[in-house]
Length: 65
Image 1 (cartoon, rainbow, N blue to C red):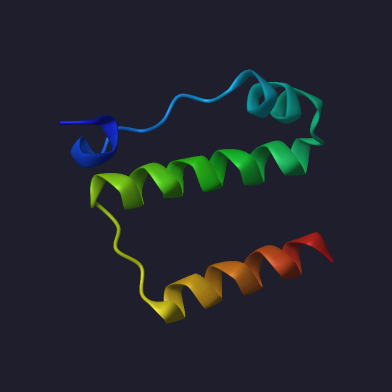
Image 2 (cartoon, rainbow, N blue to C red):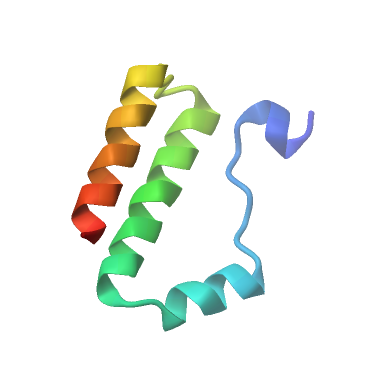
């Protein structure tokens, strides 16, 4: 079985880590939140529907304003 089929999270690339290190504090919080969410989705813990995704996107847009 591959990592994708077992639900294991992909390791971050050097570029992703460098981008995260250079990001603003709010950006770091957003990146961490999205990473945790991705891991939950990959592992099958969280299975979002369209309303959940729309709500999360709207929340992120409002927080950036």
